[in-house]
Image 1 (cartoon, one colour):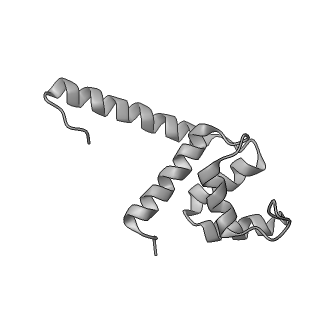
Image 2 (tube, one colour):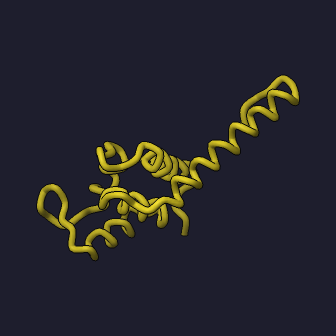
Amino acid sequence: MKSYTNIAELIAALEAEIIALSDEISTLKQEPQSLNEQIIFKFIDTGSTGKTKDFVRSLGIKSERGSLFSSGDVSKLIKAGAEDISPELLAIARKVVSMKKKHGPNR
């Protein structure tokens, strides 16, 4: 929570958080519009590049190199993005990466 100097500032900050969360929820409720978005949704769902890699491989999709899709390819997609991934969805995926780094893997 951001610091505040009075209740009005606190209320404004909390209202801004509600709007941001509502926007994230709206983004997550949308259907993927591309294969790359489908990959990003899977990563957000599992929080795991390994599980996402397995999902992509199960679809029979190869990497840009023509080899089997790897966890590194998932990480690269999240980091670099792609034209067919909405910026909002990418921001959520990056937030998941940040949360994982901060709190460690869920086991």
